[in-house]
Image (cartoon, rainbow, N blue to C red; front, side, top):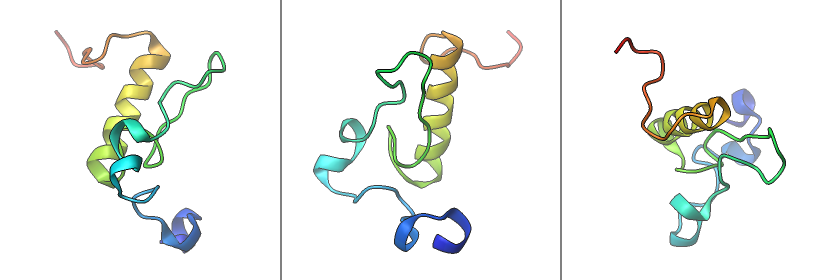
Length: 76
């Protein structure tokens, strides 16, 4: 994994999977610096494919000023 992602030691799930480093224990998607957002397995909600995809959706919603659970591009 390190070869393809440049994550040290191939950190597949980002931070350690422990009670203090999952969910709310990870970096928030919106930084304290205006306009800076984070997405990926190092951020909320966590690692793995589902967590990374959800992180990207949450970050896109925040960057676009949409409410959580907002419709992202699907026709109404």
